Length: 307
Image 1 (cartoon, one colour):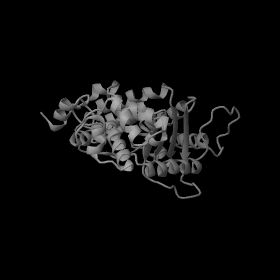
Image 2 (cartoon, one colour):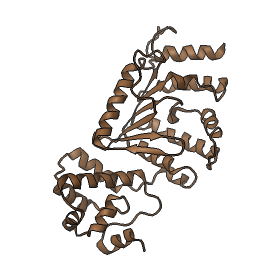
Image 3 (cartoon, helix red, strand yellow):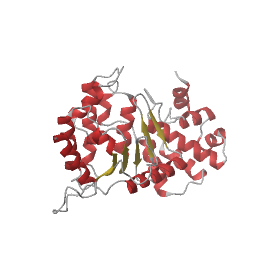
Image 4 (cartoon, one colour):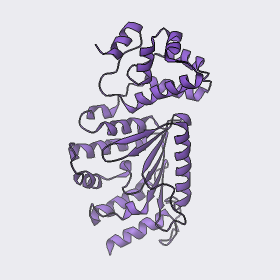
């Protein structure tokens, strides 16, 4: 029996997790550790408050075992945490089972993809900046397939990854707000072929008609240098302090959640949004193709694809 499971069985912590530890589980533990450290308590001292030994506290803070709501409340009181929104959000984070539609893809797509889907599902607001590709939840199947077929050394079946990406798009019809800033470079990529790219640009215009979706283009001619070139996704679950920033790469993803990091990326997205052209807006019936906004630039690129 593992130490984590042994601690759980002997001391009454709910259960030890089976399988890989998700990013949500890690974040829950990191928040507990940060609160305990700020309160000036050691792991044994925190454990004594809820009838746990120091090793069990360490395993809980590492995301290896769960914590029941009664013990969480005792800890939050002892740590001086009084923010109702934060307490509620942390409780929800700790009690979640990490199970959802994405569970059927376990072992079929990378763990980073499962963590991404769970983070998106838990969010009520998502802010996405993309510098080279169309955001995944706005991609058409042919465009996504061109990305995965071009990946070198991938062990995952392209067809399965495309199906997973299409399933992620169900969140677009949920009660969530989406703000996308897409660099013009991503709209000019033609690796998928002109016909696929044309369909993809038209799809962006269609998606921009959804009331909960805002799409802006950051043009090459932006008056200032963009504050960040790497793509990122800012996931806000409703409590700003529990937001997660996801920096994705081809092989791994980095999840950031320190208070200073959340503040930095919130400001970065605000700067990017201010540098970008105004959002695509279909409400203006007299819209001109030469209008200096995201709608006009996308139509200009569509015209280029025809010539």
